[in-house]
Image (tube, one colour):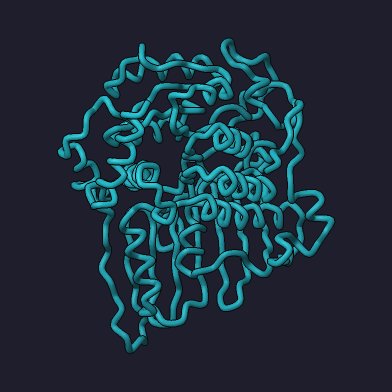
Length: 442
């Protein structure tokens, strides 16, 4: 389809020229540029519940992006989303539906796919999409093991596809402004970065008996490479994140968002050592495997990084239920989704106090503008959350979970890309694939 391909290239030039900017008032200024509405980047969605659907709604705000395929293993979700398309001004008759993501990838009209499935599916679907020649927007965390993260980085390099990780805070201006301030040196020597996530509303499901899967659910496809187990509602849909087979709890759910900015601010990648303590202290009677309370300490050469999470509590540090604090000699910068500020050290001679600053635009919308712009102009260096960024923080989050599960203080061999404890590597570095699936080789 040469006209559509030319459109993609032409709008890339427009994006590079500044028509696709991040501030809210300018995000979609391209509407006024005279681009034909019939020339589009076609998008397919894999996993239509939760963030998959949120991503699609953000994508459809970008001129020239159009949904042509929806895939989900739960027909109930699929049917519901097809009805929801009307509210997005999309004609459902122009959208194909799939129960098998591989069939969606065979659609030659699709240029880019959204991977919005549970974590244990991210690696396979992202790699398969790249192999099929598609650009990919993959939800965080990118992988459910350190080995998966490494494979995904290798796949992006081999197939040279644009891969954006759903760490949308990377595209939100107030986060970037805060990190610019951290990098300015005005805080003085930063000896500690604190990251916390207190989520009072998050609560695992009750313990309940196994049942047959609900009508319309292809449960075998939902399990995919995970171990074969009987269906249980406490492990399904949103609740998957509380079980090691499919995810890593709050550490990987929110942690990759928040730890990412701690690493970004400190210009760091992986720690020297890690240790963690926690457990099921808030809801010991509920159905979950991952800890509802966890404190993790990462050791770097010149600073310590502390992760602290708790379910069932909202009263976190600095009066915020989540955030990142950079503790410096002159002051502490506190950053979260609602804004940022600098609290001056009482005896500091440097005047570093900065009043509270609120966000000015949607980070998710800006993230999609960035992704589509790079698809159009081919400038990989402009991507705000490339696969390596997603891998770096996902690996750090996995390291914290592995320290907790092993009960050990672990040292990391950066040159070898693994722990110095081979027994821990053997048990936790990669998760076995089941049901005939295999970890992709690239």
